[in-house]
Length: 494
Image 1 (cartoon, one colour):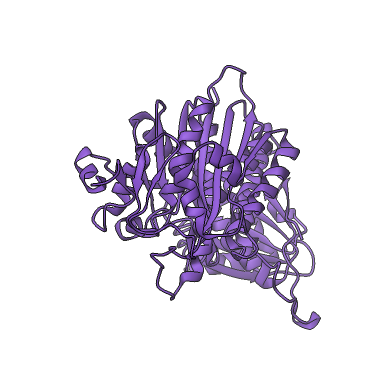
Image 2: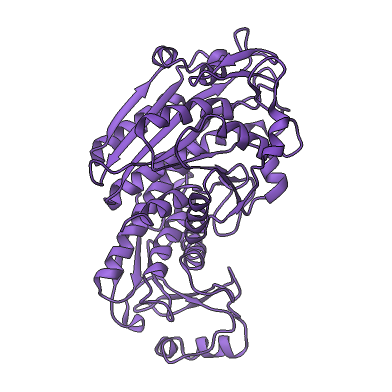
């Protein structure tokens, strides 16, 4: 069942709704705005706040039950002491949506008393409600009828009746739709999400939004001399795919923003095979590519007056009699030779040829995203995206976009001193510089294939998926980096 969104106007106390969610800050009091809600509850709201049974802490919830009509349930959700932003509104709405599904209500109203007229907050509420209700049930057997609960189907945001609020609702729906594509691709098992799946998704996005689609297979990549990408695909019988989507919303002569994503549908590590425990999580090694697809969906829905190209490279990294071996030397499409030190450092090999391929579009800036290194998880944990690049202005713009989208990044150095680690004795460079500064040397490897355009690299290995329930969303895909990509492009609209 798809989730629908609409705006609701007027006094929240006059609503007829199975669930009214009121998002409150820390140490909230019974203000004049929420006072009218107290009478139908016979003073329960006033007593709750006076007794500090609800203190408005981040993710805190408290349910008050009303009558058969009007506001039938009142759910208080705390956003904590942080200022009201798109991110804090998103998190509160996701918490509310998860609670709504537990209650089995099919509709809810969302209201922020001190931010109902704030467009960013409205957009955040939509994105958050969609995140809180998202699930991947394609392969699950439905429970018995008696055990089923109704799912949330309609969300109404209580706000002013203005063009700005309608635009905010539409923007939230666009980003949520993009994140849903990225999440679905991420959550699909590796035997369901294959390189051809990205072709199918690309075809669907292109047909609905009037984008040009280009698809390359093994034969076409051989003609392009993409030896770096193709060496990763040596060990699999599946056809590797390069998929490019061109959105032309800006002037014909405008240089495009190029978004690039790593799409390893499954990564065993190849000959340098990974340990067996938790290897199943490597189905998420396509999250960069999923983020590009999701961003192109959102950008198409928003009809932004900017030219954008999305490029993904997809294959699987498998051990076999034909797989690339440590010590092999391959040649990328820009002519550089690469000594393979570790076949588990495969994502950068795919991205290398994608970065060369991107040059034909004459990018204004290129941003790649990849679950590239475990080292970034050691360095930044699961709270920040590692941000690298060759152009400080572009890096700053990406950092600002990530902050606005609730996908914060942290700038990392790309000093020349680190390049010594990827020098090879038999080739132009090695595909890994060892464990020390692993995320930095991976970024420097990628930079060897960037030619003539500003470039930013996002290492999302710690943020694109979560192996535990985060409270506001369940474990699994997070939707990162869709928000960052979309915000970066939106910021370029003059």
